[in-house]
Length: 455
Image (cartoon, rainbow, N blue to C red):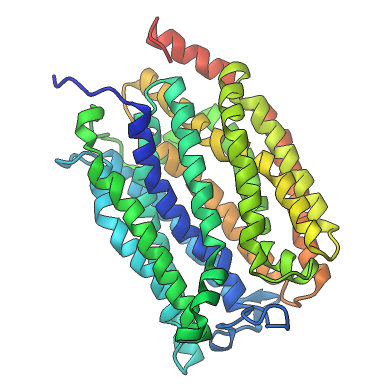
């Protein structure tokens, strides 16, 4: 049997670069597509709804807009493909491993389709634009799943000890938040380019620049990490949907997922509305979005070492519950914000704490459950555990996108406040549900099954 190389923090940092890449692409789409494809411009924010004229805007059924439905269907498709890709990855036996070959194959197509979303749906035919947007979003979510599902499975496999699981979760949380923050720079980058290529061209060029940076970041771990050197992986023989059923039959995993779905529903409402909260409620320019996000990110990153240390000392569960309630408070404040830049900084500072906690610890919980299942059954289905989590929370995200675009179809201040209020209520419920997750039992069983080996 081949002796495996030790997993080091340097290796985990290289791995975390991939998270920066895909979070940057995801951030460009999730943070700016609704902003540029819906709404209407005003004096302070002339770019709002810049591409809206080419896409059907009126509700097509009750208050459901085409754009909201397209986004929701894309997310549902994404969720359905998660277990399929996870099953493919869990059962793979490629020369380069079970996960890395997917990363190498998908980085470039993933980046290119992101650019296409802001370029292709701009013909003179609204119907053609609608169809192109739908197809491009479906392909975008497919490519994202084919990169992210195998990537997430490596969190459990490279997290061979409890310390490594918390560390890798910390590192990828850092790179994720940096990627998301840089995506908020899109209007700033576009503004710097506008004189050379025009208003619409500057947005597209800014997206292309960010996609190129993201692609390089995704390719670095894909080619720098030789999976077979660190992981003795054996292909799973369980079929994808049988594996999915087995995964959801795990009681502790279900308890985790109940709260996770609700959390991502609330967070998606908030993130989708963030640019609108700032421009419509606080009445500040969209170029301030990056400054506020950078402030939130900087404070959050400063808290990362503390979260890392506390998680190892008192456990992940109490911190996650604190994070849930703290985010609920942020959403409540957003519901009642007034005008002025100071409100943006209040939100940024308050959101930094739950962002640090919930950015790091939930994926470590999934890795714990996956590790316990591997020890109990002898079968490594790490990919399916992370895919099952994303399958569930993407359903919540899809519902959030439909609700947001439907509630805000009137584009009034009250409609945007309503979305923040819904986020508050649901996040509070998610916090209460997480009390049922039994982290101590999971870790004690892992320790028992591993004997004296460090977890």
